[in-house]
Amino acid sequence: MLACEIRAFVRELSCIFSILCGVAAFNLDLEKPAVYTGPVGSYFGYSVDFYHPSQDRNAVSVLVGAPRANTSQPGIVEGGAVYYCPWPASEPDSCRQIPFDKANNRMIKVNRTREPLEFKSHQWFGATVRTHRGKVVACAPLYHWRTVKVDSEMDPVGTCYVAVQNFSAYAEYSPCRTNNPDPEGQGFCQAGFSVDFTKEGTLVVGGPGSFYWQGQVITAGVAEILNGYSLKAILRKVQGEKQTSAVSDTYDDSYLELVAGVPRGAQNFGYVSTLPFNTLHHSMASYFGYTVAVTDLNGDGLDDVLVGAPLYMDRELESMPREVGRVYLYLQGGVRLFNSPISLTGTHLFGRYGSAIAPLGDINQDGYLGKSAVICYG
Ligand SMILES: *[C@@H]1O[C@H](CO)[C@@H](O)[C@H](O)[C@H]1NC(C)=O
Ligand SMILES: *[C@@H]1O[C@H](CO)[C@@H](O)[C@H](O)[C@H]1NC(C)=O
Ligand SMILES: *[C@@H]1O[C@H](CO)[C@@H](O)[C@H](O)[C@H]1NC(C)=O
Image (tube, rainbow, N blue to C red; front, side):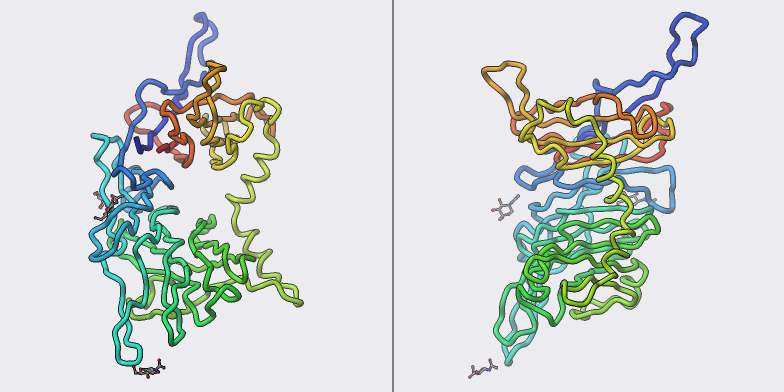
């Protein structure tokens, strides 16, 4: 079973005796989550985010990465895909592949023979996906290219695609595909292994493999990536792009500037370190913290935290623990004071429930007042 589900966190007004009306209670919709499924073996649900098209601010849908999915790209095996899933879900298989890239491998003429310039099979496109208002980015960290050398090599530089205007304009962005190959350069960058937008909408791409796995962070504006984009521009320097460089004798202060520009990441660390970990004796080796999402779920103005533990074992029957995965919801009761967690446990054995989580912002759909999160397993 490979699926994602939307959990609605419903804030209700409940009445305890007639004089105490208006006490805010908090419920989880455990009965009927919206469920989406993808092709078997595609790793559907490996990544996930919500999407609001900029034309219609109230509409919301879910984007789900399936990094081993087959696509319509000719000659490419398991290139990976990102699915557009409408919400509310009509049926579990209502998701459709977004055509970020319909093309085959590009070819290049070297010494009068044509050979592939790049290798899109098994590139893990959709391993990461993020949205910011109408902008979408999705990446293939295992995308390889032949390098600038005379003899063809296969360097895993990674690549990303951005989409705007509700998927009517696309551009590729492969910031490590440069003339600085090999492990000591950017050849093993794996750009897009992690990706996010800053609050202002600047793209932030993580490339953990550059410079002998020192790793680097690269930022660029989406407008600049789209502006003047051409399929033929293989080695392209986007205007205004910033790349952290290898650690050297000279102090590189651009790195601090970049990290300061990633509020979501910094915030997550701060919050997770303040959670009551002593309540989590059950979660040893459960990969607690594999995923985190921060959002104000109950609408009290304080951010709440969802933490995924996809290898969590359910020990209800001590003799037969079942690895099912779990998501913990910590409501922030007062500033930096977190309540004991509410837990949502997976139901499918080895389902890795919580391996991807995305919070949903303000929404008021179907007449209920509340917020939601999407949680994936499989
Ligand atoms: C993709 O297609 C190949 C070749 O047709 C097949 O062997 C493989 O199982 C398919 N993978 C998935 C995840 O559907
Ligand atoms: C180009 O091809 C010729 C003949 O196949 C070969 O002798 C020569 O070494 C090649 N040059 C390079 C730079 O690979
Ligand atoms: C946006 O794109 C999706 C997927 O192609 C499509 O289903 C939807 O109708 C589009 N929405 C608008 C407002 O054009």
